[in-house]
Structure formats: C-alpha cells, structure tokens
Image 1 (cartoon, one colour):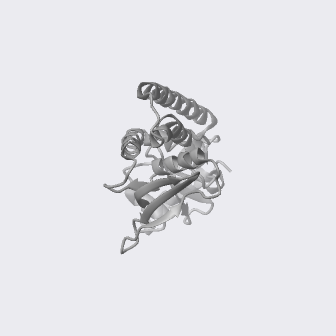
Image 2 (cartoon, one colour):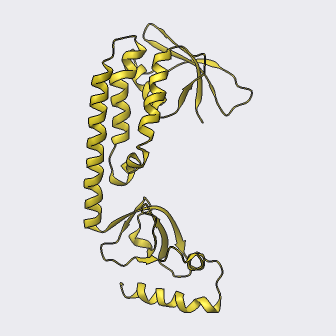
Image 3 (tube, one colour):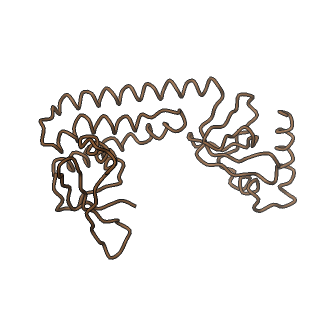
Amino acid sequence: MYYRVKNISVKGNKLFVTAAANNVRPITYSKEEYDAKEEDLREKVRSFAISALEGNFQATGRCNKESFWEYAETIKVKYQLLESNFSCDRWYDLNRESELEELIADLVLVPLFFDEPVDFDEAKRILTNFDRDSKFMYEVMEKRFKEEGKIIITSAWRCDIIPGTDVVYTKDNKWYLCKADHYNNHGILDNADNSAIELDDNNYELRRILLGYDISKETLDEINKLKEMMEEHK
C-alpha cells in the first residue's frame, strides 16, 4: 500500500500533504499535516523525501513539486538496480540502503523541494563513491561469512520426517538439510561444523519427501541414510 500524492504545501513550519491510499475505492483525497510532532520544517521535508524513496508516497500526474518527484523517481529506479546488494543489509547487519536514502534526501531532494540550487555533478560523485564503498563492504562481509561457516538462507522449512532438522534454500540457489538449532530463523545458517548436507538440486522428489510429501517404502532407505549422516555430527 502507498499514498497517491496530489499536492504538497507549506504553511509556516507545517507541511501538508494531500493524498489518497492506493488500495481504497473510491479514491478519496484528504489534506493532512505531515509529521506534526516535528517542529523543524526541513526535517519534516527530509523525512517525507526518505519515505517517498521507500515507495510510501508517489505523485499523481498533476502533483506540484515536479523536479522533486522527477529526481526521486529517476534515482529510485537507478539504485533499485542494486537491490541485490542492498538486500544483504539485513543479513550483514548493515544499514547501507537507509544511509543511501538519507544521502539522496540531503544532497538533492530537500534542496529541490525548497527551490535551492543543486550541484548534480557533485551529488553524482558522492553517490557513485557510496555505491563503490557499499559493494566493498558487502564483499568483506561475504568473505567473513565464508570463513565463519555462515550461509545466507532465503527460505526454510521444518523437516518433520527427520526430527530436529530443516530444509533450507540459500542466496546462492542451493538446497541443504541442516540441524534446526543451527538456523536462527533470521536468514543465517551456522555451518561451522559442516554438518549441513547439500541436496541435489535436480532431485525434486527427495525434497518433496523431506517436506512430508510422496513418502513410500522405496524412498525410506534414502531418508535413513540422511538420518545417519546427520547423527554423525551430533
């Protein structure tokens, strides 16, 4: 859900936004004060700009502050191309995407809102350096994770057929059977002891069995072998 913005206005140190929720019909616009508790107008605009970059506010075709919205949409498309990098923030306990949004707001969007001059070349230089530094930080963290035996998980399922285990799918598109207490349920598998068993990506039938489907006598031997392999690491 996001808000379709029809108009933005300022009165004194107050910021007003005329908007409508995109998922409510009929579409009904209302004018509300934005961030009424904040006393500093510039901070209100900064907060609004960051929220717009996050996709919470989108301009309608007739909304004012055209240069503000035009740059917000253009830059958002550009850095969304790097989403695979910024998606690592939550695993590496970094906040690079949030820092990028704050940087864009400070360098460009807030000045544009107030019709102040913007040095776009300088902004581009700073953002390019930020992108470069972010990639370096992710590479350092990726190397550290490998050294520590940590594996990034994007999906996980409890494996009832082998108690105490999970079936997990990694960021690198691999399948593992692992100890349930080694997966923290926040996207990190601790495999320092190498106990996780990589599953054949082409063996769809085995994954269905491990997840509780299609169990038959013919497949029990394969399941028992996996159980024995997991027992070896207890």
